Length: 87
Image 1 (cartoon, rainbow, N blue to C red):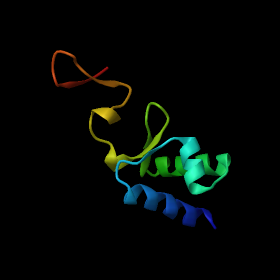
Image 2: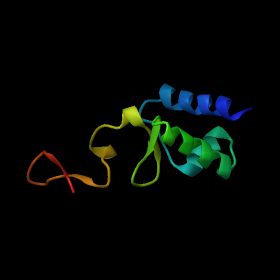
Image 3: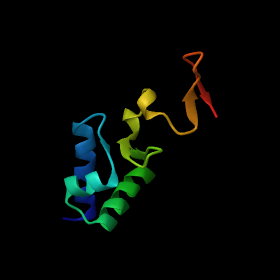
C-alpha cells in the first residue's frame, strides 16, 4: 500500500470518529505501521493542517479542536471568569 492510500485511510479514521485522539503508539497499533512510517505520515497530515498535535503530543483532527479539553498549552481559563486568555 502506498503513502497516499495510507494517508487516505488515516483521514478516514479521523473523519469516521469525530473527536478521535490518538497517541503515537495508539496510531501505530490501529494503522499497523512501523514507528517511522507512522510518525512520518501523521506529521504530513499536521503539515497540511488536517491534524494537529496537542500539548501532550497526541494527534487530533484540526476541525475537532474545540472545548476546554482541547486548549493549547498557552491558553487557559481564568479561575475567576469563564473567559479564555492567552498567556
